[in-house]
Amino acid sequence: MLRFAPSPTGDMHIGNLRVALINHILSKQLDEELLVRIEDTDRERNVDGKDKEILEILNLFSINYSRVVHQSENIKYQTQMAMKLLLDKKAFNCFCSDEALDQDREEAKKTKTPYRYSGFCETISDETKFNCNAPFVVRLKKPDENIKFTDLVKGPFDYEPFDIDSFIILRQDKSPTYNFACAIDDMLFDISTVVRGEDQLPNTPKQIQIREALGYQREINYIHLPMILDFETGKKMSKRDESSSVRWLVDQGYLPSAIANYLILIGYNPPVEVFTMEEAMEWFDVNKLSKAPAKFDIQKLNFLNREHLKMMDELRLSKILGFADKDIGILAKLYIEECDTINQIKEKVLAIFSPKEPLKGFEAEYNLLKECLKDAPYISELEDLKIYITKQTKLKDKKLAIPLRYALTNATNGPSISEVYPLLRNYLGEIVK
Image (cartoon, rainbow, N blue to C red; front, top):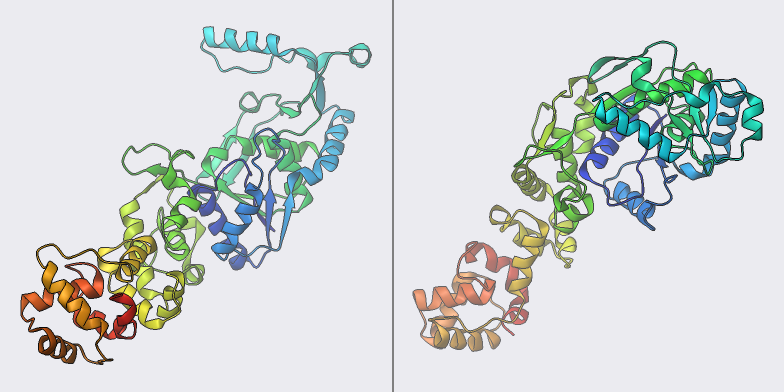
């Protein structure tokens, strides 16, 4: 089983979605289930409703999962595993105060050495612990040997005991820390492959140490995806950046299929540039992912969005725009070359049906043409319509062409009206109202 494990602490960002998409692809390729595990043990940072929003986004991107669990549901089991480690003398109670630990950190800063736990409480006798009323955390003893593993993208890693340290697995309120809850749940659900961002790399040896201390034998495959960087600054994209929010991108009018295409494309050399998720499953190979960070280029996403708009069924496109007419979908596609998103196209199409101001420089001609069109019978062909207007108003040449384009499209430039008119002739009365 694979797992996608987001935290409900804010908007899902593109790095999270990239992890979800690759989990989805691998689950299909490996013929294994995909579990969604909401990591909600950090109660203070959880945002109400974000867990539901995560699932809505996964559904929007057609990411299939077999079940959903909340990590908080497993706290009882996680606590039992911590008790086992204490009884087996592989973990210990730590009564050190925050002040004492802060003092050790300050000392490490002064000597310019990495801070590590002093080990003060590791040798305290059981009798002393029994008689101590001070609050305590539970720490896992640092390993005796190096922790080694091989990442399928980044290669082999080797962490010394000093790197891992005696880290906290239960807080003072007896709630599990992130690494402990994560390691126990991966055991509980028999996870075979973990796909996540490379910012999680330092947590991996700790989670391996937890499982080994509990005698868990199954080896988990790890895939740590390189970071996504801002195209302009070259720095890691902040969760606060609007453009890194999946919800923001969707709300701006980027198609889920185009966003998915781009997030699989970056850091990979696919056989084709424009593809669907179904097509990607045929050739995607996790071993061919780049080890280097990938830059997020909004202009590239704009290009891919236009390409996916071109591939979209016209009736479906019209429904997204608020209509149910294939002709409106065909009309919308006429604007693809000058628009990047659904929102921009929608603005063009809705402008056609909006009230129009008098056309500057052609006020009299436009008013004359508008009144003519209000009384015009249904005319199938554009050239016949022009003949009818000229006969009724005497307008011709640019005094006809410019006001007519404006009357039909609410713009003086854009697609040819010879392409536009056949798609709008059934709406002529509504357009010139």
